Length: 354
Ligand code: NAI
Image 1: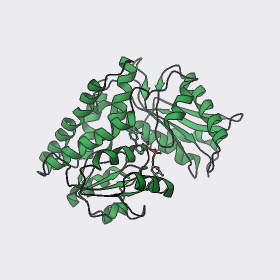
Image 2: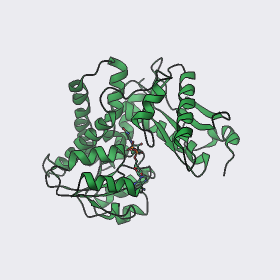
Image 3: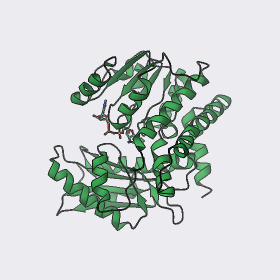
């Protein structure tokens, strides 16, 4: 275990550091708040965007690494979505058990820290943060977004469009009717995605490490087949959708995959980029995570830009994910190079022009 106070010395030595614009260590002994705000890139006076995660990590260093990896990914997501903002991420280190009183205290304390950045960082919900939490934090800080409509539903819609694009790319029609799915993680994104695919799906397998979450889903969507979390990626389906935490696609799990397509909401699905190569060689079509899960970011940036909600405008911007993904997949085929590298190259080209 790395003592929290030592982390400051570690940051720049970490391979995930990638010359971050700013990394703030949050440590408030009065409220018990510990965590990080990582700002990967900052484009002039435009705030950097990235949601906030509330999660228990075995070691604070794991939390720091996660924050750095996620904020970097947000820069790529933003650039490929045609947005001018750099990427960022907030991570609140949650204790193993969190009472509602303690939760409230941590969230309010975190919102004060976001305020202290004077608008350089704009944030919303990620893993472990609920819409009510967001409302609470917004009561002390104006720098929280995700109130115009539901940004998670936009995330799910983008993934849905990405799935359609993958199917049409494999000459399987631009339609998900009758397709089979395996959804890993049934939180905000997984549940919203399930609601979209369920009406037309052939068969849907789903899993969540929280049994009560899986039970609730089964009640609401009775045709879903709930499987053990260790089995979800092994299902023989058309599309596997990782919608839980990072690293779902790693050297162990990819040997067990039986899907044709991977398109899901989780950030940093690949343990590292070489896993993308292996998927490519296996003939499994991988839709780069930050390309298809950008709907939420697109929606919250629109909220920041326009204040007034316009569903049609947001829908059109999320729909554009289809074309973006199609271009990446075409280029990947033409150059015989895995799509994650193609997406990275395209994003880097864009943000280096900032
Ligand atoms: P959430 O906290 O609402 O849900 C995550 C769910 O995954 C929880 O129910 C948890 O019990 C489950 N889970 C964790 N580990 C698991 C495992 N190994 N197997 C099965 N289930 C597991 O989080 P949310 O917001 O749904 O985010 C999910 C993923 O999507 C994260 O990687 C997040 O960064 C990403 N994402 C979320 C966006 C959003 O709009 N909320 C936007 C873009 C990406």
